[in-house]
Image 1: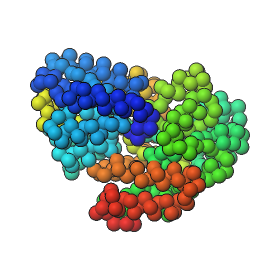
Image 2: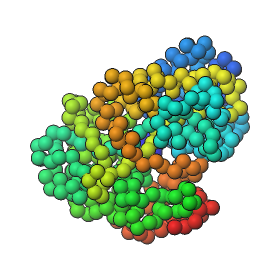
Image 3: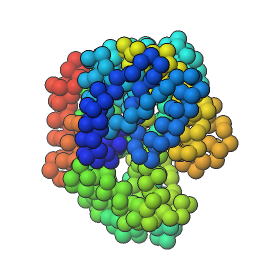
Image 4: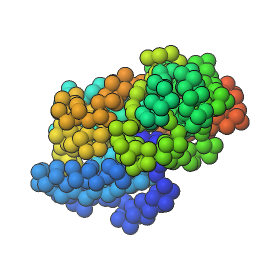
Length: 416
């Protein structure tokens, strides 16, 4: 997801590019070997690699797992696939699937062992795997954003987890002002403010650009208002915002952040959470109590069109997205399954992160599953950072985003 782009170091991205060049773009070595590009981070990659190897052993074929830096993965895949090369199986961010399917780079998995029976998959993550009525991916994990809080810090201050942004402001007077909350200035983290205010980026059904709506102007002003009220802090440099947020919360410097389940492993390494029980998770605040809304994220498995190892590639995806594999990932990593039956496993139900996020993800706001979906973030990222820095007002900044969408991203959409 977008947050992985922020946390992936430039050096790692460069290393990934060099590695891919050295191995000839990850092309399959033969019909009996499946090349799997894994875009996960260091906390998750060992588990996904182990699952892939076990699935290959069970299926009687070989698998070569190549870890690819998230930043570089999409462009590398498109470049390789254009030349008939690349991995056989790819872990794609949910916003990439429609784009790659439209380009003709993915196998239609409908009716295959991987995608023939989708009844057990949750509807929202399954939607990310479809394009033009066909199934081009299989959901691996889903996620959303929630409010993480330092239980001891809030208890010592006599503060309950806030349910609204106004309650965040009120709580800040007892939590050290700016030390109460960290506002990450990346576009993905603007979505809880936007969705919670009743806004959106585009109306895909009506083919309309709505990013500059009054609701969104209010949403971004709400985020800026937290900084103006000295109820929150941020990093003015967008490139370091995520890492600064992680460090500040892990150390106990700030009491609350908004993030996803992938971040828990990093938090538990910090001084503030040597006791894991000190990490609290609650729904994101909203304009009104109970009206917070977080975006849907996650990843899907896809199979490259033209692979010489289609059958074992499909078998690998079927196995890695199966109930047993999803239960293992949930137990060991605290990531959210995309299959309803996986949540019935007792260990999954009892997992503190999965149980906290299950309702959050269920009520999360779907993103537009359009080929241009991933490209909606870059213009918004610039605008959101400008608003938080005080360089532009929200209305002006969002008008510029709307024009960028019309000129560069969804050119056939009408301006709202």
